[in-house]
Image (cartoon, rainbow over all chains, first blue to last red; front, side):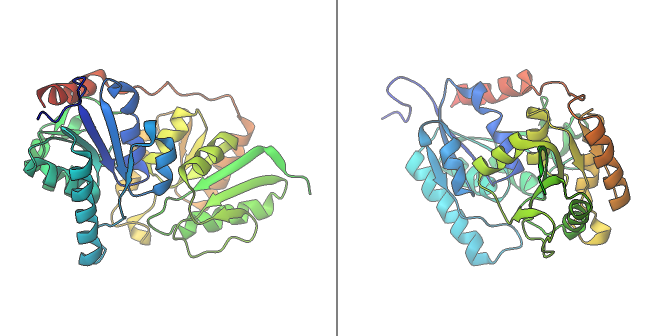
Length: 157
Length: 167
């Protein structure tokens, strides 16, 4: 059976780590109203702010954490992807976003990486790693257009 | 002493790394200005404030609440705070974390702050003395500054939509 909802609305998972990544991702929400939106992040308190409470908590982890913690996060992201079963994954980073596009691509989903606007000098390390798993890799700085395969179409602000 | 609640200053340094230089400076400022209310989110900072109220971390609703109450925000160069300040039209003083002081893994906050310094609402400072000067001038010009409304790029939405449509 087709993955999309009975009414043809596309399911989109918006996933990122907490803080600035999440706030950038949240700016897309009013513009994606025609989609069925699901959310995942590393701060439990976000659940109360998302439409319909479609929120999945992901344990925090970054490059400097232990391999066990990072592996646990990767597994949580994979489980979330299987449970939500979206057609599209959109992320602003960082580690949970990388795992999301990595697994989502292997599961046949479309994937979009929007590199954080904080990456002024170069595409983030996780963004560069996400490139081969992303259908679209966006930078929010014009001077980074075409760098490591990123495209510039403006920013979320 | 009665606090001047109409002039609350909200300080935020994110959750990931300590920023004792900014937290201790704001604690010192608060000690020198007991009639102002200062509230700080200190994250992993080791310095324990003596003159201002603080929490380690805030939920998103507490964070939004602090922004709504604040007449001035002082922070590191974190994108969450920068965007929220511009969205809510709050004056923001940014002290970027410096690599040379071991405040971050590199100097990207200096670059971020520089990229946003052209907004009227945003003032970038590099040390305690310029921070205190910036607070003084922000208090004097309270409510006078605005910055253009933030807009998500239409081309960016179109690029995203074309991927969604192809799914």
